[in-house]
Amino acid sequence: MAVPAPQLFERMDPITENIQHPWLNLRLETERLILRPVQTGDTAAVFAMGSDPAVTRYGSELPWTDTAQADARIVRSIHAVTCGEYLPLVMERREDGAVIGECGLYQWSLQNRRAELGYRMNRAFWGKAYMREALTALLDWAFTHEGLHRIEADTDPGNARSIQLLNMLGFTQEGLLRERWIVGDQIFDTAMFGLLARDWTETRRNHASAKSLPGEAG
Image 1 (cartoon, rainbow, N blue to C red):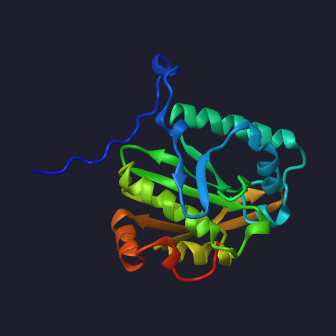
Image 2 (cartoon, helix red, strand yellow; image 1 turned 120 degrees about the vertical axis):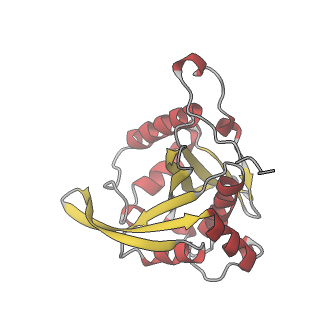
């Protein structure tokens, strides 16, 4: 007898929009972090990342100049989680409750069991492997609980830290899209990466825990 595929949450319709989506209560815990949906009280931490040119250097937006931009992002994110449209999470440090980064799964395709990975972190916490720890937990959850078959990521070809991190997590670079992003008056290429469920199983087999994954990126 074949084992049924794990259930995928369907996007809510207007008739059921008042029903709380299970993602609203999602809480993924690691040794040092808690991953949870963004909240209205996270404005200062989200703005700190979105307004830092070093953090946004390889992103799809110019650095923010007003906290209202962070508030607007948070409102959209809460709505997306409530509707089950996409899953933006913040990375909260267990020791002090500080929000130090963001990660999430976007562009969900239920038919194809596919989503796109996104992430960024406050510059003060770079180089401590927090992002690797967070993404390990998120990928575990996505492949096991949500039954995803494929997760994609795109990054600037010049973003060496991001590419190193994706490689350590088992992603494979699958192509280069020329001049895909226009940010301000600059045009950027995109390196496309993919990770299949069986790739992730192999990565986890080779590295029994997030702590044993090699390297210092993230």
